[in-house]
Image (cartoon, rainbow, N blue to C red):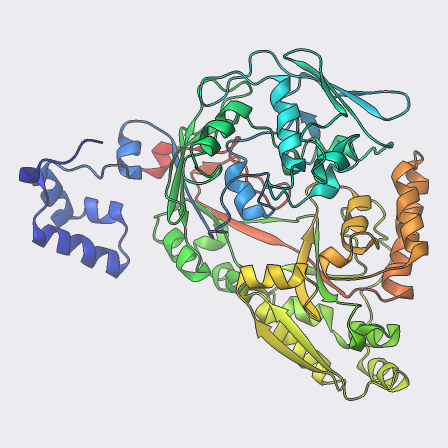
Length: 559
């Protein structure tokens, strides 16, 4: 947009009217439609440049969305949270894709990869002429390069367990080479990926955010000039939207990519505003400044009782479990009787009904109900404070004090657990930490107890168990759980071809983890909600991550 002519700039009184309007909570549209606003705009010949009103008038479909700023950039080889993925996924894509109905389908590929008889070699065929946002064409060599970039320790990829089983991956990870020997490019659209051992879950990973593909030349152009990939508009991919504006702090703009290789997006533009405060975000929604946002559980009851917003709330069930994480490396938590007592001290049904206002299902075990191996016959983990007291007495831990570090988003649940534990004689000191500090302390194993949700991007119970509780990875996830029998059962489940036998493996592993060792403390399976205006259609969330390829906006209703 060209710089405005000073002779046509709004008067001071007009600016004061706008500011007063903003403070009063009146939306821009309400102001424009008011007598003063209409007269002022007509006199000055102004039309809210860049606003949704201009977009309404020229027929473009614009969706205004708001979410918290994770402040981690948009490089999917570095980020690992759903907030960042929801935005980065507009731009970048994986070879396969999980639909909102959790069905695995081709994305960059023509078809689901074929797998060799020994389960080691995956053959991938890219679609022809996949256009990138910078005008280039995606090639099989970009897929190989992207994986090697993830493996390169300089990148800071946080999910190496998702790809470190590729043949040659360890050599890249330890810095011996930058080229992964297990990935071979045959031509511009064909490549093979060979694994060190059969790993059926790899097919699922090919459709996840853990396997995003970037054009090599675009990334190297940014980084060679000293820029940061994923910051500002330094993000190029093959997705249905291209990133055109991003100040990394307050807002982003994504525009429909007309050369997209798949089904075109239904909206022309996605405007994203960062609003960290949950209450402020919902007020913006109520005022009509945004069309779509998530609803924090702390505000759910308020808006369920709102005559208008209650009709615009949509529920979905992510593949996750909230746990009160117990760090088994800490002396206070090494006795399984103490861990069992903690489990029996918590009234999960009451927690869900009161603190969460119903936005959850009390946990019966660790595995989410929608994951293979979840035992539907199990009752909610028993609330029995008398039993908890008895177990603590047996363990000689009647004057136990525990430390709990949590983020602000989990504070209310932590305080409730503090009260439950106090009733059985355990003192829980709750410390609210900045998100970044929490992450560092959690990964370093410094937190004696904490609360978080472990969510699966796809239905895979092997990864659900392995990443948090297998002895080879549990330290990095702050649990420090270790049981050779549990490890061997989880490992055996990976190669089990009989689905019924695999379910039995998962249930056996669950019994050992949750009810023999009491190695963790599952709290509840979360229910999530988003609010969408009546003119927004097609919004569906498969698992935590917002995708906008199927969303539509009826501009006639919006106006």
